[in-house]
Length: 490
Ligand SMILES: Nc1ncnc2c1ncn2[C@@H]1O[C@H](COP(=O)(O)OP(=O)(O)OP(=O)(O)O)[C@@H](O)[C@H]1O
Image (cartoon, rainbow, N blue to C red):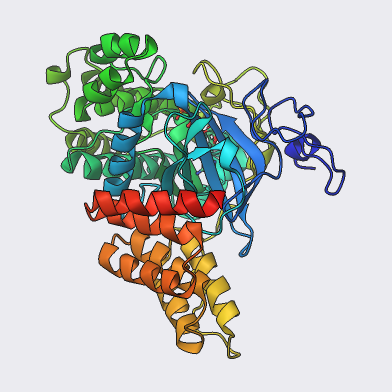
């Protein structure tokens, strides 16, 4: 049984439970637990139903939720108001948009980033959620992104297993090549962001996610810098800003992070990862490279992360001669059971010492594939064998949207509209997809079409407001939010 199910209320039991660990009963009507701050099980946010707590980070909780129509899982994060100020949240939203627009293979983009208040829960229909009236004490920054099942600890556990190591060799690879492949993806994501003048700000293990052992994602661009990370990831030049942030000046840390501090955090991550996954003969030659990147003075580090990675790649491409008997002495980690399957491995140093609570049980990764590279998500065929109804096309579009296949989602929604142009929800979904693609003018047209069909849906007004904001038409956006508020209260 999934460990987490014991914390969920039984369907139809009528009792309200929070998703915190250990779970406990909530008072009637309570959406956010007043004791531990976790959401109530089965809370619905827009079209998503919250299913379980994934973990608790530096500034909030992460949950798995299900898109109610397509059944696709997504990850939802809630940052409570005390974690940042509204100006920083606005800056985070802008940065989320810029990193999403990079469309980098290893940057986990955020579908939606908005403010939300638990007082205004009434289940809207779209993907942008509700804005709360300013000054609410129950205000949260809510983000929604693709659910990625694997964590860094799963990757470590996988490589620590001797049967898996043998399988990798049999497939013509090597654990060293796999580790470097993963590090290169992380480095490439950071380099792409740095080229746009954006720093990540907290490259901690919780922000490294895996959709297969070869496919890695860096999460929380634009959000990670809202709070400083713990040691050993915090670069020395950030100490004072981190202190200021802890005393309530979150802006200080936001402003202080840089490409050089990301380089430090990346090297700190390598320093943790390499000894756990490779034998000493393979990782020790990399230590001088890492010490340069970990230099207390940023100007003494590599000029860029790209150069650091290049040096690592050059060094690791040299063959290392080892007798077979010496290969992969597994580090002994107290309490760790090395199992044949990754889901059986329960801890590594990535679970400890970071000052964070990772309370959710491990999520098993899909079986290691037999081929070389596994795509993040299977492509969904867009042309079905049987003619589809508009509802089928809409559902297909929803599924593709959740999988970030926005171009394919557009095609599906357009097919739905060709058959039935009179349904507001399809136009709304089309607008959301154009919005995700940053095609704001087309998004606006789609929302206006939806509004023409159903002028009294507050969600449509909210989403129209969001796109007007993105187009710089802020006054019109405010009018839309006001109208949405009026419709809600009427
Ligand atoms: N998109 C996601 N898909 C699946 N699991 C996720 C996703 N995002 C986060 N998680 C899981 O939820 C946990 C908590 O995430 P959260 O972002 O709140 O904190 P963190 O990344 O661990 O730490 P930090 O607050 O320092 O970023 C993560 O450790 C990770 O295991």
